[in-house]
Amino acid sequence: MKIRVTLTGRSYHAASQLPPEIELADGAKLSDALNHIGELLPDDAPLPASCLIALGGQHVGSVFSHEDVELSDGQELTLVAPVAGG
Amino acid sequence: MSLTPEELERYDRQIGNGVLTEPQQAKLKSSTVLVTRVGGMGGPAAQMLAMAGVGKIIIAHGGEMISPDLNRQVLGSEAVLGQPRAEHFAEYLRTMNRFIEVEAMAHEPDDDEADELARRCDLIVSCPPTFEERLRLGRAAFAAGIPLIDAAQWGMTGTLIVLKPGETISLDQLYPQAPPFEEFFPVVGAISCATGALAALEAIKILSGAGTPLIGKMLVYDGFHARSNILDLGTPP
Figure 1 (spheres, rainbow over the protein chains, first blue to last red):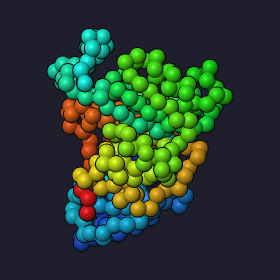
Figure 2: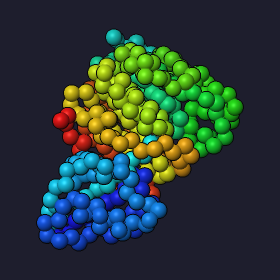
Figure 3: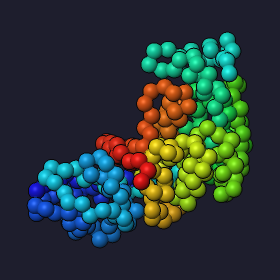
């Protein structure tokens, strides 16, 4: 199945390292998607633990803390690395 | 609280269809907002709230203005370099609108001060550079039962989060593991102003009752790639 991926926030500069879609085995879980994305990102720009995760625009947790839900074909995965600049 | 003829003249362009009603404008006049800090985003946020007619604005910002601040801190100027920001910024805001009150605090509030300020306010616009301060302001807002607007920036990207006690998760729940402090983050002033202005717009809507606020959502604008996302942050567990 294919999952659409958007990487934004603090890590927007690394977004060009990711394809707009990733291919995962049927029945794959959120952790599988995160591991796959982690392999595509440069070693010096991993997803931070505080990175927020949304599925279909709905916040489901962070890289640090999330339920490992099963993904479905065509789902949109948004990753927002927090920014704190004032 | 009613509006004087002079105030109605001042706000003439923002009272009417698609903007505010006269009673909604009067609600702004009777409102108090805390904006901290008032640099790249808090500065334009405070400026827009002052010009919109929010009756009382409390700003908090420590330290002295330095040259790199002037790529984004619109309340400052060459004349303020080397001087404490808070009172200069407050004085500038007063020159923008004689019908409002501006109070300045020349340091960032600690836990007790944040709680005390929140009890005096109707809403907090949070724009500090650290998650420690953001979480402190979030806790103070929720303890006082008032909405929190959290604006943040990095490089050419900005985020806006609007939370309300009882209706949304808290900032602590959103960030169970706060990111580390990044002192020298890159930033372009245009994204600071855009994010700060949107924070002010959300505050104006919430305080006046006009429009549909972004409550319970996070707006992310990636200015580098010219794309935006809105995430639904959910309700309290």
